[in-house]
Length: 224
Ligand code: E4P
Image (cartoon, rainbow, N blue to C red; front, side):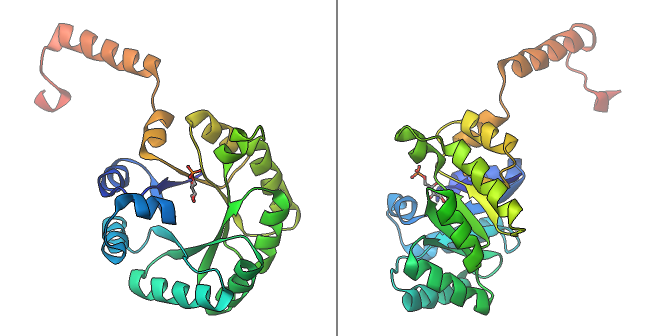
């Protein structure tokens, strides 16, 4: 599983980059706008925290293929490293994806809600497709089932495009997607923490501490 952080909150990125097996950061125009700050400074700060080797996915603000390509080239030039331009699925997005494939710039096709959209994106050359799990659940769909279907279709066609499931609102959705073989997920720092939390784990750790201290006090192994 490839874990990515879906935020532009620099403190959260710093924290998760230190404590979790983080593969990168995704943003979208809504996430960037929430930060209400200078665009270039923000995305360059994210790059500085995660380094060149981790993925940074930034969404285009253009709607026409040639302009998407122009923006992607600029983003790649300024942000360097492992960079992917996020493009919402559509005819212009597919055209841009095919052009960017030729230029060697990675594409994450976003705003995916159906396996048909995902398969077409993969065939156009997208490196990742990002289905929105919770937004599907919100309208009585089954986001994780859609992810499962995309995973199996990509496998059936021997595609190397990866599913980057997005728009999660709880850890159970992430767990279900993982059990369906989803390649990667982008989540908030809260969900990242929930994924490793369990009250029985807390109780087990408290028990180990109590038993140790009962015999050895504040001594640790390093003190023997
Ligand atoms: C990430 O790539 C998506 O843009 C994001 O996860 C959408 O999440 P939301 O449905 O919470 O806005």
